[in-house]
Length: 461
Image 1 (cartoon, rainbow, N blue to C red):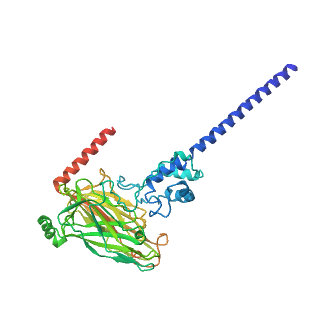
Image 2 (image 1 turned 45 degrees about the horizontal axis):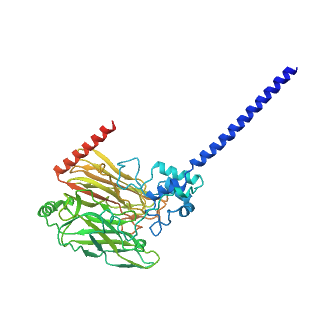
Image 3 (image 1 turned 180 degrees about the vertical axis):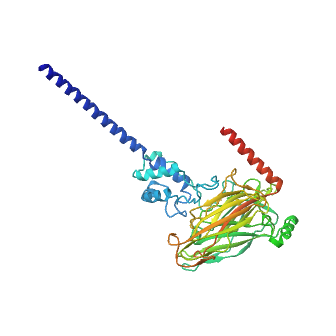
């Protein structure tokens, strides 16, 4: 009996010790798990601020165009939930391309990666902690708004700065379209290698919806003049004209031509302005500035670039309907497509650009599936992805307009909408930068691209 009792007490003691060990392990695991969970929550200073600096602060900083700053934790924390909503739905940063269709390699891709979106979402869901102040990256030295975007890259301000004549927009005035013409002042043939256009002041950004600068000049080269004249019956050879020089709208910072390409500016040329102003509740007088960085006179590029407006034809949208329009633009010479920017108004929903080659091959180049009238992004293809297309290729532009109540931007789904310049009217066209090649140069570009792709494939193997 005593032996049995001693055995039972021993079992109980061992059981008690085991329970104690289990409790200790569980307690330790709890501490470790809690610490790991705390460590897994991203912090502003270490994880989120670098993302904001890279993708958001260009607009979201004091005295810039965004409604709030995201430079400091104190600036950002009140907006945490809104930030998560905007980035997880990919409304911000503004990059509205369909990520499943067409070319996805761009020079100016401002979109967030899946990993960056996940980091921001987990930061917000974890309580949006600040983190260690010592982890905060050094502040970005953003240039003053008066500094030209490409000044550092080209070691100074633009070589040529032109300005529209001043316009005063009343506090409650109707929309206005200001169309003055100014001389470039050029006395010799010059080539543009980069262009910027912008409202003259920060206040001017409040009233300037968009500004177009068209280069007006007579082609003096006999070959170019003959090409235009030879095609007079069918319209001019648009590959040999000045096209539209540059456009400014919210979301565009300017453009830099690829090496060996540029826009030709002739002596005695002029800039025809087409500026859309809208009231902002205060009287503002402003101008629009055009800055042109020129190639040195002895370094003229070989290939000419033209900014084309590729439209889809008439717009006729019945109430409470979704409408589709299409247009075709023939490439009159072999070319490289440099960039694509859709333009529509409040009913604009989506736009695609497609290449149909003479042999029947078709390629969707880009599809903007979530067009937002508040942003006018120009999608600039990367050097090794910019489409090279033969002479005779048709560029097909398709636009979709949503004139229903499902479109939150729609001011009134119960009215008919036609083409017009007003924001409540509609239009549909793509701004497309095209560099043209003579046939031998085009074949050389294709061979160079194919060799580079073969080398990349070989390196991957």
